[in-house]
Length: 609
Image 1 (cartoon, one colour):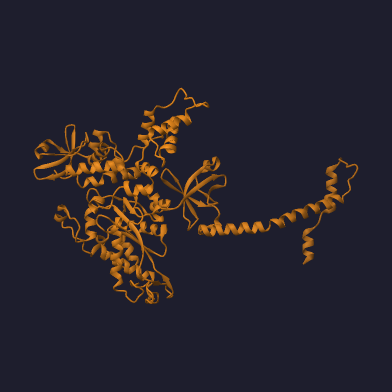
Image 2 (cartoon, one colour):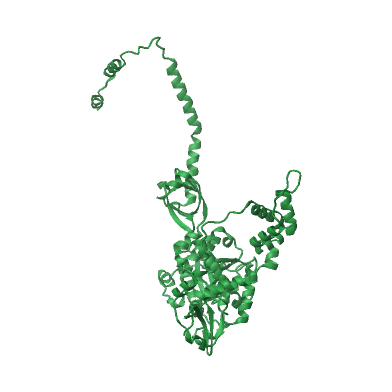
């Protein structure tokens, strides 16, 4: 009998969750009740069974995560993110109950719902069982439900703070009275109105719409800055931020460029640097580079820069399921929020609260302290750089971006695998397993434990998710996106019937766009080949120049039309009409005229030479 074994006795199937001397923690996989401690002797009549036996006994069909659509994967990861903090304390009944209570309050659901998710996952130990069953079609709201939703938005979710009763009365007045203000025979009851409100209620929307965003952040928002064990009980919570490095760089020709931007993601549990991006551009551009670096193979990444990286020193190639950011415009943009489609939960901290993501702020301090003492006099900025009469550190710049990135990469390797973490709250299991006090060692051990919250995603899927989106329109000329036409085989019906669709596009290269349907991306190719390889700005400039050329010729075109009309009228006016046009022997007449006007073009051409 080992940890996580499935055991069966008759119709009963249990899973072993913990073994501690003379007692065993098990969960009933059939009834899916909360785990209980039992004596080992009780399990003597049990024998091992497989996950297929459990699936047959419960009627739960096991599926592969890859077969789930985007919406199912999103809900699956959200549910796992919800119960992940409990998994580390599953053997402690008191702490487990406290966590269930706090999670239920935070997410606005019942404690029983949290228990159901927890027991379902513990029974199968497979993320896929948390995915919702795909509905064939979504039920449309009835007219009464639409009226209730309208009344809630207009009268209840406002700063006027009307009660539900008042919103109900206003709904009856506006929607269920005749022209004289008399109530109609049929109308929804207040209990139906209250039930619809409770079914559709969103507490965050409730607080913000009635009290304002600032009040929500001050008094109602979830408190997430009270220590790593409460905020991040396992790996999978990434903190994002960016900073301008305290050093001036030059290009290969020795011309001053300025100070680069370092963007990083730090795991809140282990403090490992999951990935970084060093660039001259900030915003969404640097975030895309950061996301790609997080899921990249770090050994191969180091080889590109000529740096040897051991896999165990930086073994991170998956996305954290929770990303914590500040209120920067790039983090609140639609492009970045689309990452939620992969199942990632994005938490935006309020402005001017850097202490709530102190690990990433500390990372920047440690990295810059690591290289600044060795690069004095080579472009590094000292604290007095803004004071009057201070040395102009720009004149000292001598490193290029490539040189500096190699230095930063070495600093990150030291930060991950060489820096001692003195105050990490070690568990007994970590001590017994000999986990070293380095971020990489803590990460490598923790990511193999139950509760690790990481998402595997390909670089293509990640980049397509982060691309900006717009609306494309089907027509006989193809799919029109950003005033350009695109085509893909198999869409003849859409071209003929028309309609709109969501499209992801790359503003840096208009050669292709990707149509988003049911979470899948279909590539469409540009029809107008003259724009291949160009960015969207170049295309628009070219289109604008063409419009200007056409516009400049409009007056000349009108004058040419007038001249044409005058010439035709002059010729027509000079012709006299025959009083009697003979209609007989037209064929003979045509034959004579052909002979009369026939010319030997070959002879004429030879004579011209």
